[in-house]
Image (cartoon, rainbow, N blue to C red; front, top):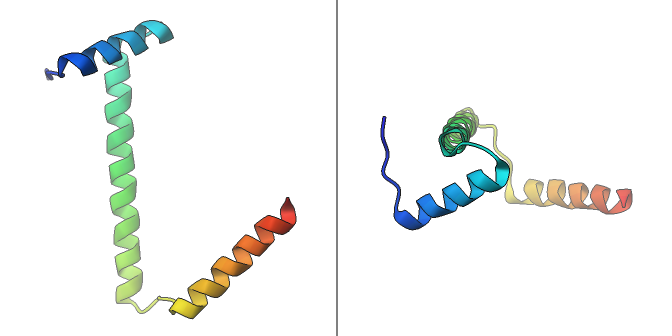
Length: 79
């Protein structure tokens, strides 16, 4: 597979690769892998959420507020 990058992006990629002592192809593969993995994870999480909604596993606005307040309170007391 071959991809064409805009000149400015290609320059940035080359600069980054040289700073890291790596090959530009390796950086591109790593970036694409991260993007694909993130999109797969995100899609999976959205599907889980939709399944929870369909099965009635939801929280009211008030319940969300209580959970958020409790969470923030616990974080503040840990500091």
